[in-house]
Image (cartoon, rainbow, N blue to C red; front, side, top):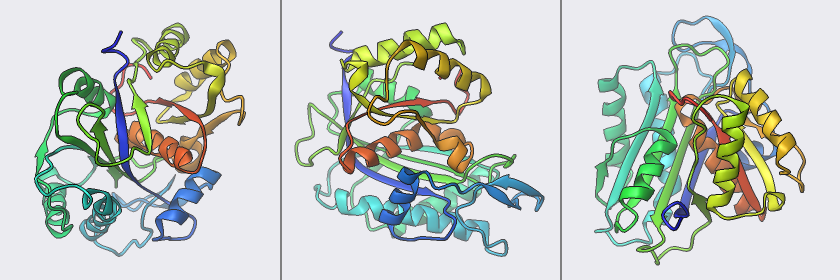
Length: 298
């Protein structure tokens, strides 16, 4: 039970999603995300130029995709740099890159290396394997006593099939409660619990278990977010919400898919970032449902 109730400190957060008007100010980005601003619209795809309904981080069709991606990662690292600057230069970082793009891997990795090199971040970063919340679940099991911080950078950019998708970039810095005492946490991310199958019964069990890991009374949950959820998953969530009273202070789900489009591999991280931003603004406990990359169940 003690192992199941492990959690991570959320120490830093960066979010970039499409807006109706471009905005470089993180406060504007945050307010647009929390206010439910819709960014989905019909526009040309980066991949083949076809007109599809989706959201983009930059709408300049003539701009080089590598340059756009470089600026996206540069902004993410710039958002996190002030937090990392408060830590010693020898503070180790474990780096989880969660990327979904039509760009060839050698191409986006070259862009990533340039962004990191130019960021001015002093701490050494060691890559870790994994994707999505399964990687965080593994971290809680295997590396809870590490001095290293877990730096997650997730991006969906120019996806292969863009219809109905969102271009999203998220950065999250996590710390172990046993070893990190320099920075004050913004929030705590408790252990995720994945539904074994995409059914209402399995999701009900997983929801109850996730609440039990905290532990928390479901009626004290202030807000519920969903990201990367298909129609079947949405139906299962509706069934669970009728069984478990949540969102009593702000009724209803905050549907990130409807606002921005499907965030792909960034789905869980976008939901975590949105919940963290809400807490930063004074909200209470947050709960998330996320799908995304190859997840059998939410």
